[in-house]
Image 1 (tube, rainbow, N blue to C red):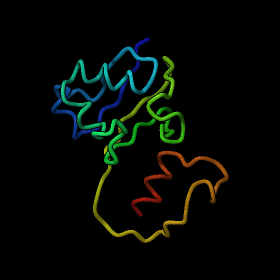
Image 2: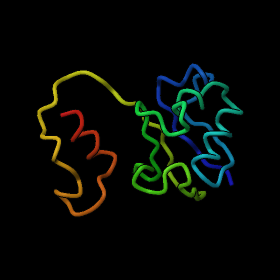
Image 3: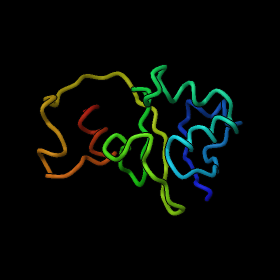
Image 4: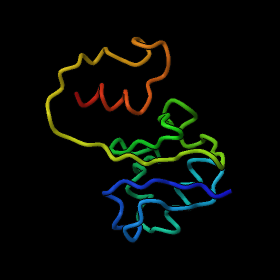
Length: 120
């Protein structure tokens, strides 16, 4: 099945400036492999040397960070919205580190909440 993957700006030089890449994959791990076949060099940036997702990136399926799902083994479906998000840096942290989506809302934090908590 083909999955559309939204690519962050910092990886566009590897994709020929394409912000959406279509790959056939059943899991996030397979998606990264197929993306690297189409766009060489992307896997080395997205994954750390130990094979985990680099801390500079989030991979989200339907706005859920795969770290809160099954990680690289997270299953993909044809209608999923998949996005690779590059972290941003700078600014000052003013929200206590103990603040989390689980404590506030009783559920996993969404992509939007993770960015608000980390970068506000």
